Length: 422
Image (tube, rainbow, N blue to C red; front, side):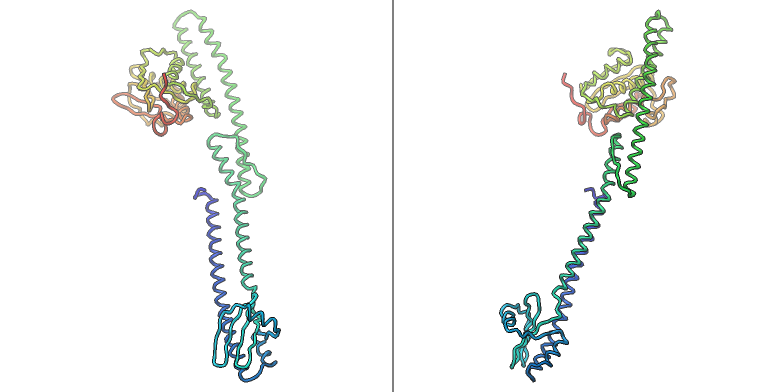
């Protein structure tokens, strides 16, 4: 149980209350027993002196019984009863004097006083003794404990919907919209749960509408682009044809990037994770850019051939965007791709970035030296890396900008990256 949770705090408070009640009960019982014992001792001392003095001077008669009745004492006259008491009673305390002795007896949850004088032996019963006194206190204590436990169970049951709501909110925070926290209760927690449930249902509807709209729009764009590419192939070779090919390639690349964004934001971007060699993903990225592996624009350095558990298509788009940006912003139109155990680096010669890397990963942000970028490249890269538990690193060394794909913690091999078997 989390010590900061409300359940823990409620349990702790009730436990303290229970311990306090138990300690108070034992203290009260002990105090009451001592006080009541003192009362009985004082009472029996007075009765003993009174009875012994009377017996010393007189024989037992009705006057003695009347006097004893004032103190709640009654003379036991039944001989068999007296015999049972004398044979079986527990002797609590005995006090002797020159004219006789008195002994406190406890028999069958009742107190008796044995008076032995020089002339007579009588047994007095304490008719005012309350054997049920402590039982009542015990019953009161038991009732308080039961009420406390029932209150605790009731309170925890009221908190359970809050625990359930927190669990569903955690699922929602991780992108899972398949939640259900609707309740039939009418208290404030139930109202919040139902409001959150209704809000998520509305979000699901809006998200489904958005996904449907984006897919329809992209489908409608894809058709004329495909027709344009086919029509361009039928044109004779010329500069105009090359320009049209570049335009349609750029449109197709942007469309693929929009598809990647749609996949990531809809929560289906990384469901096809498998282990692939990084060099194979790099080949796919170069194919997307219509570049050959041995192109003079691209230099590949494989320090260690590794494999990685990723969505092949999405990760290829991320690498393609990094290569595209590196070529676009480099002063010599070349990029070095370095694959090692700990990171994948994209190195290009150029000026140091004017702002921190976080500035350029915002959507629709572009550098000051390019008029072709819409600012989605790095945003898409970072989104794909975050979906794979990675981050984009940057540093500037000796006139080179070095971007890198790295794990959030530790080396790449610690989570998803392995040495490839070739």
